[in-house]
Image 1 (cartoon, rainbow, N blue to C red):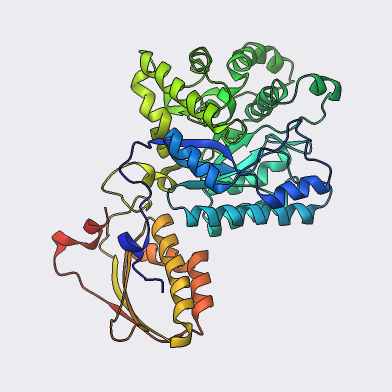
Image 2: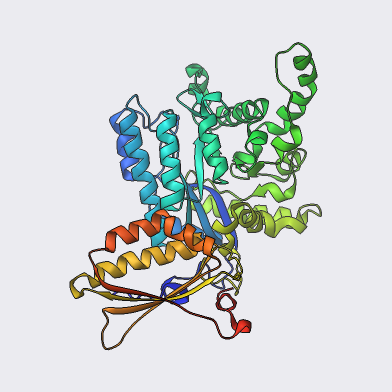
Length: 464
C-alpha cells in the first residue's frame, strides 16, 4: 500500500551525493508509437537519417556512465503531421503524457519539453496550456519549421503570447527545410549542413521580427553550438542599415533579442567553435547537450570527457565550467530545475519556496476515506501532493500521516505562504483533478486552521 508521506518521505530526492553533476538539455526519446506513425506514412527516413533505437534503461546507463544527473527529453524530427491534424494532435498528446509519466517514474532523472501539434496553431495553444499547466512540462520544443510554418512567422504570435505569459523555455530543433533541394541532401544528409543552416534561418527570422524582444519572458535555446549565427549575426548587423533605408526591414532591438537566446553545445563542440559562439553571447548562456541517442553512448561519453578537459585547460572558460555543465541550466529553468542543484537544503526536488506571510495558512485536514476506496484515494492524494510541492512556490508543506489503528483516517498538515497562494492552489488543474476524482471516496472532511505558537520555528524553516 502506498504511503502518504508527501514531503521528504514520499518523494525521492532529485539527486544523491554522487559525481553526476551534468544537466543535458539536448537529448531525445524515440517512442514506439512515434516510430510506427512515421513508418505508416513512409517517413522513417524523411530526415535523411534513420531513427536510432531508444529505451529507458539504455538512456539511464548512458547517463550513469557519462556523469549526467538530469536529461531534458524532447521529441525528435520529423514533425508528426502528414495532412491529418487530428492524427497529429493525438500523437503529440501521447508523447507528452508518456514523457510526464517517465518524469514521474524516475524522479530527478528526466525533465521534458512538450511537443505541439503544429501547424495547427489553435491546437498547439491548447496543447501548450495542457502540457505546462497540467502535465508539468519543463519547456516547449518547437521545430524550426512545421511543414513550412517557420518559428518567427506572424501566424505563431498568439502561441508566443501564451508561452510568454507562462515564462516558458522553448527548445528549438532543426527539421527538414521547406522547401529543400533533394539532390543536395542526397549527397550530404541534413545533419551535415542543412540542419545548421535551418537553425540559423529560423533564428534570423525571429530576430528580424523582434520575436524574442516582443516576448521577453520566453527564453529560447538554440541547438548545435549556435549553428552559423556567429557569422550570420555580424553580417545582419552590417547589412541592416541599408535594408532599413530602403524600407525592406524593420529596426531590430539587438540587445533585447540576443539576451533571450541560450545555446546548447550538442553536435561537435570544440574550443574554436565555443570561442566563436562567445562573440555573440556570454558563458552564462551556454548549456551542455549530448544529442543522445543519435550517436553511440560511448562516443558521447568520451566527447563529454574531452569537452571538460579542454574547457578546464582554457583560462577564459575554466571559471565557467561547472555553470556550463549544470549551473546555467538551473538558472534557466528556475523553479522547475532549482532542485537539480546538489544542495542539502533542497533534497526533494521542490521548486524554490516563498516565505510565510502574515496571512499564511497552517491547516490540519482530517479526512476519513471509505475502506473500499483507500488505495485509489492514496494514489490521487500522492499525485496532487507531489505536483503541488514541485510546482507551486506558495505550497510549503503537505505532510500526511495515517492512524495506525484506523488507516482510513488520514491527517494532512498543509501550509501555504499566503491566502493568495492557497487560492492559486485550489484553482490549479492538479488540485481540481484530485478534488473531482475523490469526491465519492471521502466519507468526511474537517479543515482545522491552526495558530503557530513559536514564530522562530515557522513551518517553512523545516522545508528550506
